Length: 219
Image 1 (tube, helix red, strand yellow):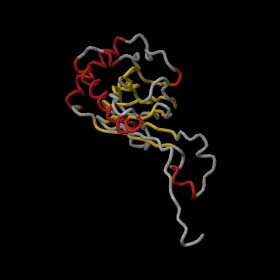
Image 2 (cartoon, rainbow, N blue to C red):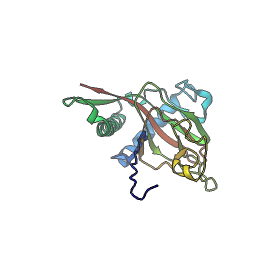
Image 3 (cartoon, helix red, strand yellow):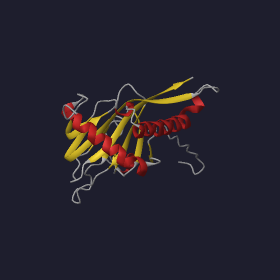
Image 4 (cartoon, rainbow, N blue to C red):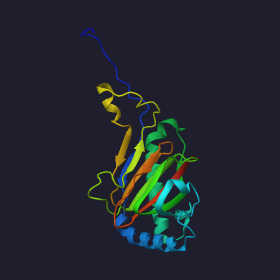
């Protein structure tokens, strides 16, 4: 190749994913855990949603309306999460919206998971929404002998990205996955098409998370 050749790089079809620490997490945490523990005692079954029961092991899951509660702490959490979603989707999409458009983001489904020792959730994605999120209310603890215990794993959405591997494909990320270690108060926002799983969690303390799906409307 000529020394004068110019090569343009195009970084296309990237998958956006965002994380942040929820404002007021320390203030909200105890009341939310109390509310979830009370709700868990009222459950008729471990997977109260009745959705994909065989994909979930040793965890409690609520129905998909947790953030619809009129409990003041839950209402405040919903407000904070919807504000964060709106900020993210506006930054990503505003250039493609009509100039005078006003946007609102709404959480349309929400639920908690209380994961016990050995619990996990197989790979899945979330239909009928645009953005999803996980709020780590209490990440619990992980086994000192298992470096990947309890992580959330996200999978490369490019179906054939790992069909061949050599030094030229190292940038893809090794095995086509990205793992995140839950941190107290952390929120992860991701597009609904992104497949993900909760790897087996090993800890004496229950892990408590709140998950949610959202849509955004323009006015």
